[in-house]
Image (cartoon, rainbow, N blue to C red; front, top):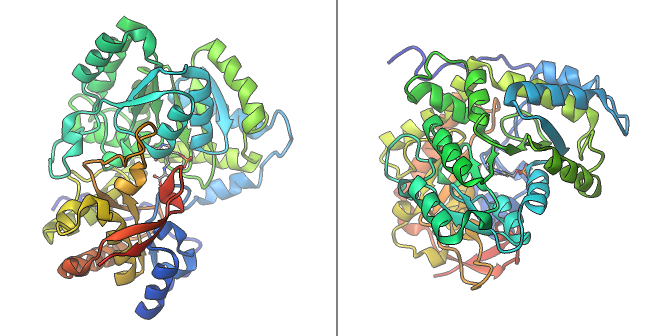
Length: 460
Ligand code: PLI
């Protein structure tokens, strides 16, 4: 085994938070009361919390120090200027509009860049992203390569856009009917799969020929850059910073949820090069978020974000991050557990179709698997399948994604390898009694983004 197959934590721990495990009887009560929805469990009833990597990051001592120099002026905060310079320098975009989190940026972009009835092609959907696109009259079209929908297929850069699908859409609908291409790096719901630099370049060339804009969802861009450095020819010798900078040179702008790769607990932003679009975004941000110099964040949050973004580019940090996730994936694969392969940047995705082959998708196998994992071990995970996908806005039927998964999402700088061992043991033990996992049915189904607050009961 090479020395850095699973590198040790590149930090030492200065402040700790106690976790505790409640009894199985208590967990049984908790999951029933939560309507079999892990989003509705109280955090102090959770032992290891792998619900999400969003806003769950541990900040560094330097970020906490930065919080103390928060400038909470209503306008013109010094911390915004620090954040703005940092983002301009690293990402290379001309303008930045701060927002309270990623979906705030998605809301603004969708309002200013989509006209009623226009298509928004993207490399697989994300829940809030598609919600805002559709809410503003857009029609989402999935143009990710086919392989991304196959959990078992272990090939690099499964997040790539299929250029033939994009070309076909342009030919059929006309370039003027495409609002922009939305390219996510990495692709969350495909398993945290990266996009290659080659693909980004090709998407740029194709869209330039047709005068179509490209906006990236850069929520996990540093993780994407690590995969490029590790696996794409010609990038081994480049720094993560250089790779990120090159990635964004092929885009017109981006949305960012700072709660992931900016290593903070709250915040986001929207970037663009176009001056007119920036003027529109600035007019809207005051209505939805706040002044263009804070956009829903406190000064201290912006300072922590500027520092966090720089820290995330350090090779030791991102190498450990990606490899800790891979460690958990390797443990599960060794035990024969079906997961999305290859392991992505932020999470392990259990393949509920192969884990619970006795359950039809309409019985919400991944939702039930997540509930049962909590019951088994106190480990909280999240459904990423038919429940998350919601219903077709026009037909009212369920979207039925091929990937029916449970996401074990690893917060950044929070858990150790030993925690990963415990999670693997819990999943393996549940796998042994997998036939006992029952299906579910809705007892409450919200109209929008239903997975957050839906309630279920078990079926026979
Ligand atoms: O949670 P927000 O509003 O800061 O960001 C929305 C968002 C946008 N794009 C992508 C790829 C995301 O993963 C994302 C949020 N993700 C969450 C909350 C998650 O648990 O994955």
